[in-house]
Image (cartoon, rainbow, N blue to C red; front, top):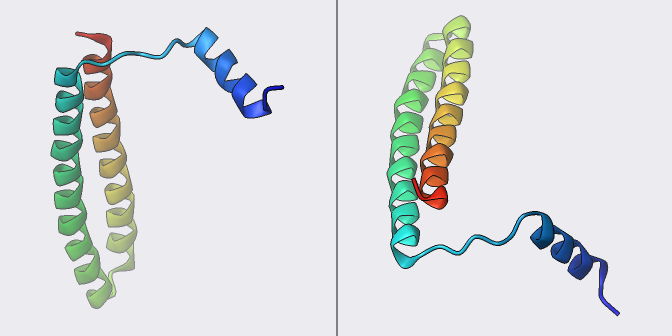
Length: 92
């Protein structure tokens, strides 16, 4: 008798078959991950410094704008990363 997990995985594989990646594709995906981790870290450091400065100055309007900007930029970079990785997975 199969567990609910095993049954769910079988159904998932039927609807979306597992994609086989070559070693080259795996390397490309890892390189993309590293590139975007660096970009995200760079933006976080930069914006965190600006957030600290705004906090010290008591500029709460600017603080809110920077928080929004930080969230938006990081989200955008993550989406860009996934888009590039999807191109590799699909073989483009």
